[in-house]
Image (tube, rainbow, N blue to C red; front, side, top):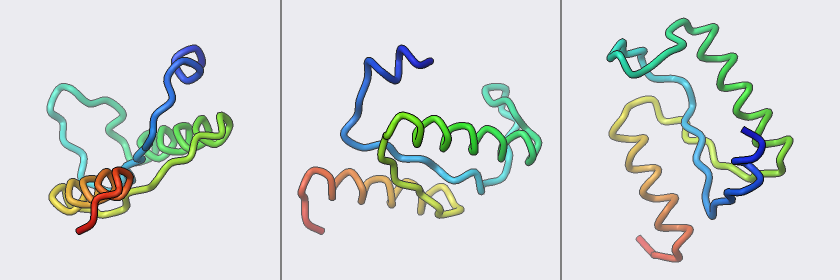
Length: 81
């Protein structure tokens, strides 16, 4: 994992808050709220340890999350609303 972190740096890192309902769609793991929170904490720890700036998206519905991410990308690219 560290090799990937060292090799790839991104202009924008978005961390989606773990606040949407769990969906057992066969693609996801860590279904318990405790496991999800622990994984979220691990991600934050890894980002901070590697001095990677990130933006938290805390909206709790999928449409709002998507729109917030679009807004962040547009801001990064210097686009005005």
